[in-house]
Length: 291
Image (cartoon, rainbow, N blue to C red):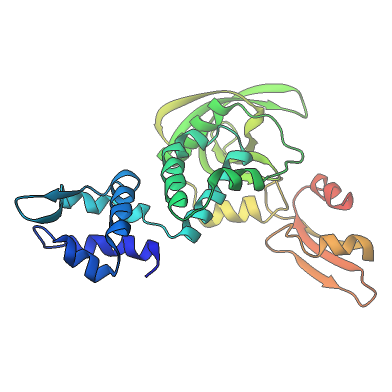
């Protein structure tokens, strides 16, 4: 029996039992006394399973049987724990300080689970790196408040810098969804000032204030139609479809990347590649032409 499978088997041994003799545990799990001793240390110290020896009952029992209900979410195989640690590592590098502190308790528990399987979480963190390109600095406080308003469905007052005009404008918005696009964060929202759906770069939001007003909810289909039918970060109804042709050399990169959910690609016999993408603003196409 695999080690992680054995850990899963322990709770069932105590279900509906006052106490279980050691001899019965060893026989059912087919383990030695030394292995049982190691299992107890791991179950108690690392997986928070309160197994006690009751001398009066002549066996082992759970200190609080109801506490088992809190365990299932933390019982991972080595492969599952590694997958979660990989995700956590990538999130931490994606935006340092963004979710790392909130995931720290989970990360500590996962580290202990990995140790029981002979895996080293520190090595994992050193070997997985995320390289950023074109990333802009973002105020963490603004992101957290906007994220909270998005989830709690509340309006927020923001001061947003229009980079084209250099003007800072105070607005009240009802956030609909957060978007991470090419290493930067955006919030799609209903702008009460303009009376329409707009996308705001969070790093261009100079100040935020949470309001005690329910956010205006936009129909999901309407939101997707307006914000995702256009190409890239320039949300809006797609006004045309661009047809871009790449040389054989460039095609080796472009054909394997997703630039838009509704894109169409054609690889020609000579190795060149034609990409068709809907767009709402010509500026976004410039990035494609620079590939």
